[in-house]
Amino acid sequence: MALYAISDLHLAFNSDKPMDIFGQHWFKHDETIRANWLNKIQEQDTVLIAGDISWSMKQDESKLDLDWINSLPGRKIISKGNHDYWWTSISKLNSLYDNTKFIQNNYYNYENWAICGTRGWICPGTSNFTSHDEKVYKRELIRLTLSLEAAKKAGYEKFICMLHYPPTNDKFEESGFTEIFKEFGVKKVIYGHIHGPALNKLMDRERDGIQYIMTACDYIKFDPIKIDL
Image (cartoon, rainbow, N blue to C red; front, side, top):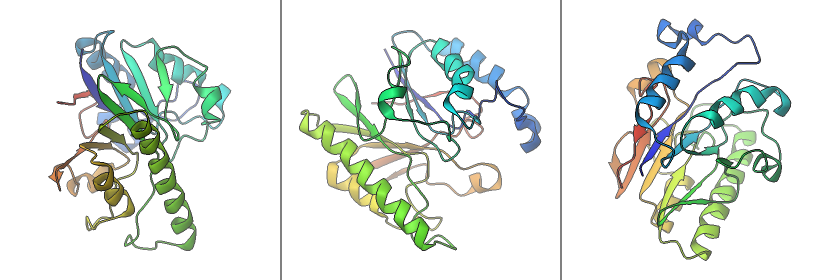
């Protein structure tokens, strides 16, 4: 029984969205992910997938992508990314599968750990941060807090958080997200979203006793990484 993570699958089984326009390493990347997944992940394992799941715009269009994920071994826990426009009500999503579940204001457990999270957003201090960004950012802080509070109320004391966006700006300054992590004693944060040249500047390390783990699939070579607990 093990815990793994990956994000930014960017699946497009129901649309014409070839990812290799972003580099040859993306050519048939779904086949690479599947091969790596089958090589290491067992049915008793859990995989955290932190957003940008499917390019589909509507839920019925995303079914092929979600079915593909659900067909892979292991229990899957998914949080939302900025491209997941197909994302509908959380109750509707969580009625789709027995072994693939979705996070929004709720949590799931892995052994005695609570898996919490939200999509996140760009943080203050980012260039061109607008009043609209401020509104979305504050809403995402509320959603993260609700997720952690639900787990804490249920008696959990150890927390792993999933975000899609990085939890700080590109200068790695403190944010509302990092403050919430410290308030609740979060031990590990997985995130994605970043691709290309921006991968040269990441928070993929421990800070203030919290381990920040970058899981965008091109960064981890399309191979789910094990989360050591």
